[in-house]
Length: 118
Ligand SMILES: [Zn+2]
Image 1 (cartoon, rainbow, N blue to C red):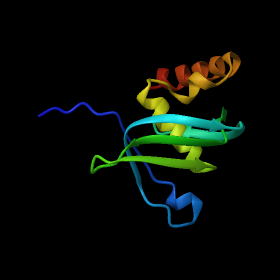
Image 2: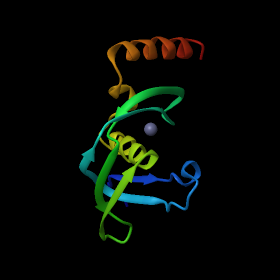
Image 3: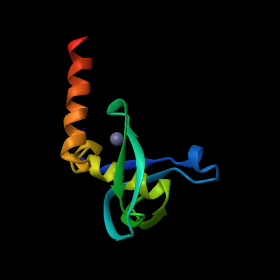
């Protein structure tokens, strides 16, 4: 049976060094953002590539948990960044869609070279 879901799983427990539970959100939607911050970011879809990305400093995201109850998650720091990154994926956006044209050109050149060696 195929079920089409917009779903994100975020685990920042390793980096944050505190007991942050695994966050599973179905149909996540950003309700509110605050501030702006630039930080280095990578993505499992782009192995070995790290770049600086500007994102909201804080976010409030609403969605549904695994039991079907509506919930809101407030995040700042790494959690805020991870939530925005994963929601971007659901909307078909990668971090390279959030960088300057110049950086994107460098990215393309670098990955074209890498691909030509395969
Ligand atoms: Zn990613």
